[in-house]
Amino acid sequence: MVKKLTIITILLMLVGAGTLFAAPKSGGTLVFGRGGDSVGLDPAYETDGNSFMVCDNIYEALVFYADESTALEPGLAESWDISQDGLTYTFHLRKGVKFHDGTDFNANAVVFSIGRMMKEPKVKYFGKGWEIPPQDRPPEYWVSMEMDDILDSITATDDYTVVFKLKKVNAPFMANMGMDFADIISPTAFLKNPKEFIRNPVGTGPFKFVRWVKDDRIVLERFKDYWDKNAGPYLDKVIFRSIPENSVRFLELKTGNIHICQFPNPQDIDLAKKDPNLILPTQPGMNIGYLGFNLTKEPWKSKVALRKAIAYAIKKKAIVDNLYQGLGQVAKNPIPPTMWGYNDEIPGYAYDLKKAKELLEKAGYPGGKGLGEITLWSMPVPRPYNPDGVKIGEAMAADLAKAGITAKVVTFEWGTYLKRQREQPEDMDLFQLGWTGDNGDPDNFLAVLFDGLASEAIRTQWKNEEYHRLMIQGRETIDQKKRIEIYKKAQKIFFEECPAIPIAHSTVIWPAHKSVQNFKLHPTGSVRMKNVWLK
Image 1: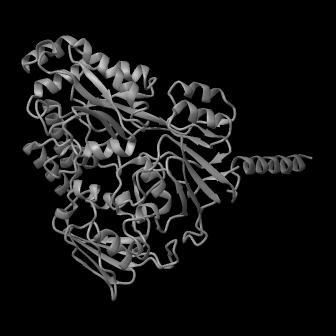
Image 2: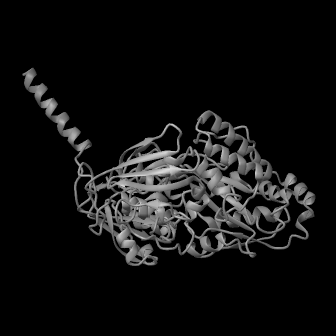
Image 3: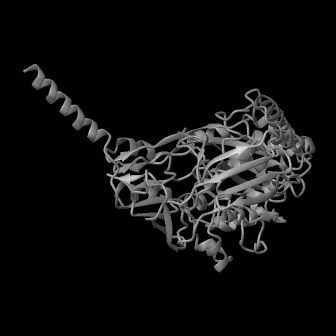
């Protein structure tokens, strides 16, 4: 009797385990609701998360980031070797990988994909390769990361071996090779029409591109010849729908028209918690939302006191409490506190109206007189680091008014906003932007966002010699303890000079239908559908 009960108990446990740990099921269409459309789908030339989240499923890089972290794993490269002097990286590639157009992935494709971003390509194919056409526009990530000053040459030594030679030691190099800009594309597909590749992407990823209805949806379908036979993709299709209004997007989730809701209104989180049909994937954000200045024109370029007056006039805690609904924390540094190298000794700019008025007077604008009406550019779409750009802009403008500063909130369509902001136009004074980290390295925030001496592509265009030297030292120093000290010094200079105002680090919560299985948020903001399935 005891033995029978034991067997029955074990069988029940196994059935229960089967329910808890059900095998992934193939099939179905997952609809992902997001706040805005992609700008383009060529990873070398895009900078926005709405573009990258689609690229994450179409393309792959030589190295991958592990689930829910920035630890490196083999990707299209099975392994790699690094020379003792840190100047030679040899990647050994996977065999049997196909692009979505049926052409072979090989070393020459890597040489073409990365080499096309070089200002003066120094590349060598194995046998016959392809001529690299001239760039239509600068590859922004490549330029802002000063990759032309880092990478000397790329050589395919055989069909499945690629050698990268560096001009100088670069500590973040391997981490950078997992970023979207380093994705490998089909050279054949690109060369058919380089200008249209941005809307007809071809990679090696788990899903292939089907169609794009502008400002409505992008449709991907499972790539049946995907190389990794030990995992997904399981879904037949993934549809990225653009639904600009946060509340409408959440309602679409509640009614079952979408499976995942990106960036709900913070107040909708409580409703999601009470809904038995929803789950709440959550992760502390590796991000920063900030308010920048147009540092290419006066008075912002030279008047540090004026920039600090703006910083002390804004009620950041009230913005986090009321507009982020507490789903985040007030920022005092331009990197998140979860990142190594964070300088906790920096006091930050706490709200202090009296100090703001004193600094305004010191800058030569007592009570705001003589400054005139300024523009405050506010993002039109929700982002991981900013739930509602226009409402936050309005709150900032109200705070500035109390100090005597009149600010007009301005916004544009997302692609236009990014394009015009990059141009640093005369009619822009303040602007909202932010960042979700790409690779877990402080260089990816401190240098890429704020070192204006590195490149004209840096959106803040802050030019500080000492800060620039620290960014170079940080990249050329391998010892992480020394790098930590370098980046702590950089954050001190940032606080003293106030080239931008850190506002908040958000907590990322994307409610999903309970039928969605194995969907994981990633600190880089990647949207990975390879291992997701529908119950």
